[in-house]
Amino acid sequence: MTMQPASTEIASRIAAIVQELKDLEGPLLPILHGIQEEFGHVPHDVLPVIADGLNLSRAEVHGVVTFYHDFRAKPAGRHVLKLCQAEACQSMGSDAVAAKIKQLLGIGFHETTRDGSVTLEPVYCLGLCACSPSAMLDGEVIGRLDDEKIEEIVAEVRS
Ligand code: FES
Image (cartoon, rainbow, N blue to C red; front, side, top):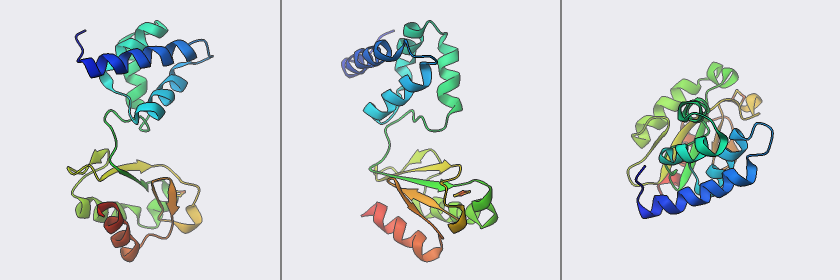
Protein backbone atom coordinates (compact mmCIF):
# COMPACT_ATOMS: atom_id res chain seq x y z
CA MET A 1 0.00 0.00 0.00
CA THR A 2 1.46 3.38 -1.00
CA MET A 3 0.92 6.25 1.40
CA GLN A 4 1.71 9.95 1.39
CA PRO A 5 4.22 11.09 4.04
CA ALA A 6 1.45 12.55 6.24
CA SER A 7 -0.44 9.28 6.05
CA THR A 8 2.71 7.35 6.90
CA GLU A 9 3.03 9.39 10.07
CA ILE A 10 -0.61 8.76 10.96
CA ALA A 11 -0.20 5.07 10.12
CA SER A 12 2.73 4.69 12.48
CA ARG A 13 0.86 6.45 15.29
CA ILE A 14 -2.13 4.20 14.61
CA ALA A 15 0.12 1.13 14.68
CA ALA A 16 1.28 2.31 18.12
CA ILE A 17 -2.32 2.66 19.34
CA VAL A 18 -3.08 -0.85 18.03
CA GLN A 19 0.00 -2.20 19.79
CA GLU A 20 -1.00 -0.50 23.04
CA LEU A 21 -4.59 -1.81 23.10
CA LYS A 22 -4.53 -5.06 21.16
CA ASP A 23 -4.34 -7.30 24.23
CA LEU A 24 -7.61 -5.99 25.63
CA GLU A 25 -10.58 -8.31 25.38
CA GLY A 26 -12.46 -7.10 22.28
CA PRO A 27 -9.77 -4.59 21.30
CA LEU A 28 -11.23 -3.27 18.04
CA LEU A 29 -13.70 -0.74 19.45
CA PRO A 30 -11.29 0.72 22.03
CA ILE A 31 -8.69 1.05 19.27
CA LEU A 32 -11.14 2.83 16.96
CA HIS A 33 -12.23 5.15 19.78
CA GLY A 34 -8.58 5.86 20.61
CA ILE A 35 -7.85 6.76 16.99
CA GLN A 36 -10.91 8.97 16.68
CA GLU A 37 -10.04 10.71 19.94
CA GLU A 38 -6.53 11.47 18.73
CA PHE A 39 -7.25 12.37 15.10
CA GLY A 40 -10.91 13.40 15.22
CA HIS A 41 -11.69 10.70 12.66
CA VAL A 42 -10.73 7.19 11.60
CA PRO A 43 -8.98 7.53 8.23
CA HIS A 44 -10.09 4.65 6.04
CA ASP A 45 -6.74 4.32 4.34
CA VAL A 46 -5.20 3.05 7.57
CA LEU A 47 -7.77 0.33 8.26
CA PRO A 48 -5.32 -2.28 6.90
CA VAL A 49 -2.87 -1.29 9.67
CA ILE A 50 -5.55 -2.12 12.25
CA ALA A 51 -6.55 -5.33 10.46
CA ASP A 52 -2.95 -6.54 10.29
CA GLY A 53 -2.33 -5.68 13.95
CA LEU A 54 -5.38 -7.61 15.12
CA ASN A 55 -5.18 -10.47 12.62
CA LEU A 56 -8.56 -9.55 11.21
CA SER A 57 -9.58 -9.19 7.60
CA ARG A 58 -9.84 -5.69 6.19
CA ALA A 59 -13.51 -6.39 5.48
CA GLU A 60 -14.15 -7.15 9.17
CA VAL A 61 -12.57 -3.89 10.31
CA HIS A 62 -14.32 -1.93 7.58
CA GLY A 63 -17.65 -3.51 8.56
CA VAL A 64 -17.29 -2.41 12.19
CA VAL A 65 -16.16 1.13 11.30
CA THR A 66 -19.09 1.67 8.98
CA PHE A 67 -21.63 0.00 11.31
CA TYR A 68 -21.01 2.46 14.15
CA HIS A 69 -22.06 5.93 13.06
CA ASP A 70 -19.82 7.51 15.68
CA PHE A 71 -16.71 6.85 13.63
CA ARG A 72 -16.01 9.55 11.07
CA ALA A 73 -14.07 8.82 7.91
CA LYS A 74 -13.10 12.49 7.52
CA PRO A 75 -12.16 15.22 9.99
CA ALA A 76 -15.15 17.04 11.48
CA GLY A 77 -15.88 20.72 11.04
CA ARG A 78 -15.05 23.31 13.70
CA HIS A 79 -18.46 22.65 15.25
CA VAL A 80 -20.27 19.32 15.52
CA LEU A 81 -24.04 19.48 15.64
CA LYS A 82 -25.86 16.27 16.54
CA LEU A 83 -29.61 16.07 16.09
CA CYS A 84 -31.54 13.45 18.03
CA GLN A 85 -33.49 11.17 15.74
CA ALA A 86 -34.71 8.65 18.33
CA GLU A 87 -38.34 7.91 19.15
CA ALA A 88 -39.25 10.58 21.72
CA CYS A 89 -37.71 13.32 19.60
CA GLN A 90 -39.31 11.89 16.48
CA SER A 91 -42.71 12.16 18.10
CA MET A 92 -41.99 15.82 18.85
CA GLY A 93 -41.03 16.78 15.32
CA SER A 94 -37.31 16.02 15.02
CA ASP A 95 -37.77 15.22 11.32
CA ALA A 96 -38.96 18.74 10.60
CA VAL A 97 -36.13 20.19 12.74
CA ALA A 98 -33.57 18.13 10.82
CA ALA A 99 -35.07 19.14 7.47
CA LYS A 100 -34.91 22.82 8.40
CA ILE A 101 -31.34 22.66 9.68
CA LYS A 102 -30.20 20.69 6.63
CA GLN A 103 -31.78 23.29 4.40
CA LEU A 104 -30.25 26.23 6.28
CA LEU A 105 -26.78 24.69 6.33
CA GLY A 106 -27.02 23.17 2.86
CA ILE A 107 -25.74 19.78 4.03
CA GLY A 108 -27.15 16.40 5.02
CA PHE A 109 -26.26 14.08 7.89
CA HIS A 110 -22.62 12.94 7.97
CA GLU A 111 -21.61 15.98 5.95
CA THR A 112 -19.55 19.07 6.67
CA THR A 113 -20.19 22.50 5.21
CA ARG A 114 -17.75 23.52 2.49
CA ASP A 115 -16.21 26.20 4.72
CA GLY A 116 -15.50 23.55 7.38
CA SER A 117 -17.63 25.34 9.97
CA VAL A 118 -19.97 22.52 10.98
CA THR A 119 -20.52 18.79 10.70
CA LEU A 120 -24.08 17.51 11.04
CA GLU A 121 -24.70 14.10 12.58
CA PRO A 122 -27.71 12.13 13.77
CA VAL A 123 -27.68 10.80 17.31
CA TYR A 124 -30.03 8.31 18.95
CA CYS A 125 -31.14 9.70 22.31
CA LEU A 126 -29.28 12.29 24.32
CA GLY A 127 -31.07 11.46 27.56
CA LEU A 128 -33.08 14.64 27.20
CA CYS A 129 -36.33 13.07 26.00
CA ALA A 130 -38.46 15.19 28.34
CA CYS A 131 -37.22 18.26 26.46
CA SER A 132 -37.45 16.88 22.95
CA PRO A 133 -36.72 17.57 20.19
CA SER A 134 -33.11 17.72 21.31
CA ALA A 135 -29.68 18.40 19.89
CA MET A 136 -26.08 18.56 21.01
CA LEU A 137 -23.75 21.31 19.87
CA ASP A 138 -20.06 20.77 20.62
CA GLY A 139 -20.93 18.53 23.56
CA GLU A 140 -23.64 20.75 25.05
CA VAL A 141 -27.22 19.56 25.00
CA ILE A 142 -30.00 21.83 23.79
CA GLY A 143 -33.65 20.90 24.36
CA ARG A 144 -37.03 22.05 23.07
CA LEU A 145 -35.74 23.01 19.65
CA ASP A 146 -38.01 25.51 17.98
CA ASP A 147 -37.53 27.88 15.05
CA GLU A 148 -35.86 30.49 17.22
CA LYS A 149 -33.35 28.06 18.70
CA ILE A 150 -32.64 26.61 15.28
CA GLU A 151 -31.83 30.10 13.94
CA GLU A 152 -29.58 30.73 16.94
CA ILE A 153 -27.71 27.46 16.46
CA VAL A 154 -27.20 28.10 12.76
CA ALA A 155 -25.98 31.65 13.44
CA GLU A 156 -23.57 30.35 16.11
CA VAL A 157 -21.99 27.66 13.95
CA ARG A 158 -21.56 30.11 11.11
CA SER A 159 -19.93 32.83 13.19
S1 FES B 1 -35.15 10.49 22.15
FE1 FES B 1 -34.18 12.37 21.78
S2 FES B 1 -33.28 12.81 23.68
FE2 FES B 1 -34.15 10.86 24.00
